[in-house]
Image (cartoon, rainbow, N blue to C red; front, side, top):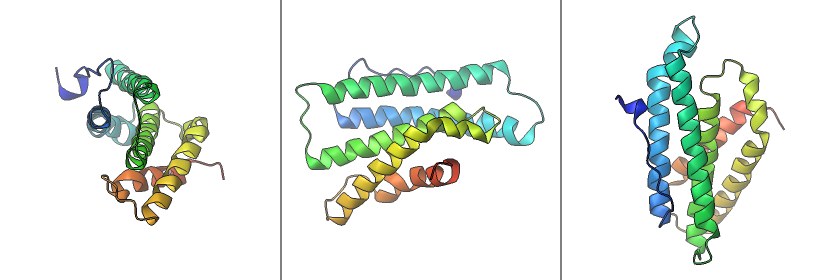
Length: 165
């Protein structure tokens, strides 16, 4: 079994923001490995469609992001979950990363750029959360995440792919 076919094991319940972050970044790592090793080859170099195993892998990765989001929402809604201002900014950055990577996973094997029109709500959420993170950063709240890693790439994708003003 190669790396892009490894099954992710997302816990039934997150115990901390660090665990949620680690699991999200692990799924994103699989997405980028898949993108570099399969998607780029068929999307940009070969003049043929994606093989069935690539389509299945893309669907599996999309499902992993969906499961992560469901578990993360449950974690955030627990009555025992109380978050500081600092932790709320970390949550915002995790949501930005989730939305950004989910869009990447959902569009990776799609040939038409118009597919991005289906993600206007997600793009809007990315911009809104990024604005919150940037405003908080300006008010000198220290973050555990670096700002460029946290929001710039997602904002760039939004600016390039979203056609909604």
